Image 1: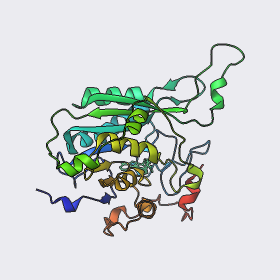
Image 2: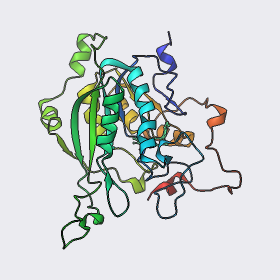
Image 3: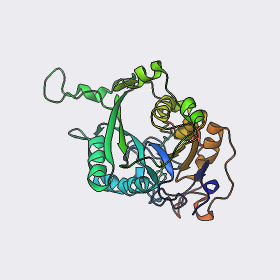
Length: 305
Ligand SMILES: C[S@@+](CC[C@H](N)C(=O)[O-])C[C@H]1O[C@@H](n2cnc3c(N)ncnc32)[C@H](O)[C@@H]1O
């Protein structure tokens, strides 16, 4: 049996397709936001993908670099199956995912629907709840389409995202003492706020952050309060800058994360105010570079769009 000390309050820098450090039924809550499909480049030299595509195709484990939409949905399923394995029965898996991805002049991908369907059809997870995150921010000009003529008018792309909450069937195995019940209670004000199915929350200002797709800390905090107890273990398989782990830590929960790119280690450390363990597997210290690629001097700050 793995000692909890081996994985609690740690980040593992390798692909989440095999979360080998985590035993079955060891995590109390999962909150995550997978890479956007083929929109952002999370590699050290990457940023927002524009006309000049420079995806980190060299790192095959990067879920954001997968070209085919079907492959993207199916590769993420490998991670969701691992999430199912490590989550305790009765516990929640919160997936933040865009509602719609626009592609080309015609058509769009209903990404949250496709991913939800794939999870429900291919894992024993059950659907538990849905929150719509309204970003209160700029509308997307593409929506005007054929205006003033009818036919090609879309609702604003990207203005909302879904937070889909799944549950692993079964009874939660742990019992808590009175102090934990007491400390984990929600106030009436919090309840009134959280039960509104639409959360109006401004996204973080990605231009001034150190990761190109940072999640909202407020969303994490809401979910941590709703679905975990003080002292529980909260996990994010796509850690990025560490927002989920930060929210867990701020609310006296334990945390564990997976992130493909070790160069986010310093960003996570800064975000959490902790020093992470040093030992990184040698082969993962830097993303693989193409042989004929010149040395890139790009800083993480340059990843912003
Ligand atoms: C949308 S970002 C997560 C952002 C995070 N929620 C935050 O607030 O900073 C997705 C992250 O997943 C990482 N990633 C992509 N493929 C991965 C894989 N196979 N295993 C682990 N991490 C991966 C990317 O490097 C990126 O940092």
